[in-house]
Image 1 (cartoon, rainbow, N blue to C red):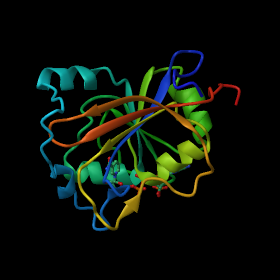
Image 2: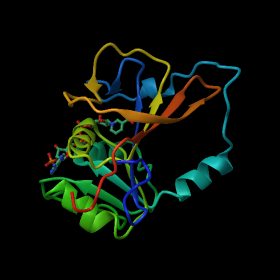
Image 3: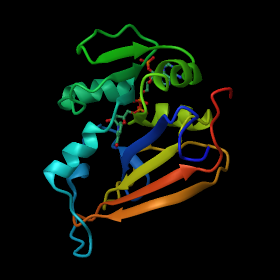
Image 4: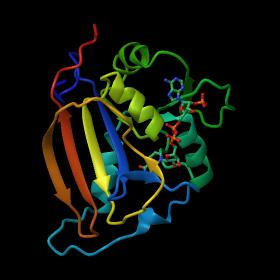
Length: 192
Ligand SMILES: NC(=O)c1ccc[n+]([C@@H]2O[C@H](COP(=O)([O-])OP(=O)(O)OC[C@H]3O[C@@H](n4cnc5c(N)ncnc54)[C@H](OP(=O)(O)O)[C@@H]3O)[C@@H](O)[C@H]2O)c1
């Protein structure tokens, strides 16, 4: 992967918020740790308009079913942007923008997502992100690190084999969060 996406220009970006010690959720699913802000004077902040423009540029979200269920409980954060939920279950349809997918993940990316969308965001959870990484389906990792140690919870990364990634960008925010962007070293090809 080069981090620049596939031949058609589509790109799969894995984005999650992690604690300093590598957890993306507490065992009880509580999310108050995501609000744990610090102060870093040298950091940047982004305006509401900039944040809105950034979100508007996302063409599609991809979620595991547990993340989907949790997002519905918390208050849907994905607006009307097309969203694909990966599940082997028959889940009730709740939103027009949501479609469910069950099956091979490479087929999902190569036949359903990249022909339709360019800026594809895989936003969790850990299980689905790990499957995507194992299959080499991620072009970019954007990891936002929250300034908090949780000690326990759901780990983002499982037992993956060693793979090098290129650091592309680092942004430190005034609230103490840091965003790290990495591009995959080898290009993912549609042929596999
Ligand atoms: N901090 C963050 O940025 C962040 C981001 C996202 C989520 N989270 C948190 O992470 C937790 C959920 O993560 P999780 O790892 O437990 O679950 P998840 O990845 O959201 O969902 C797992 C489910 O996805 C489906 N799935 C995964 N791979 C599949 C495949 N190859 N084929 C078919 N279905 C597949 C299965 O659904 P079925 O069981 O329905 O078949 C599986 O049980 C929640 O607490 C959520 O709030 C945190």
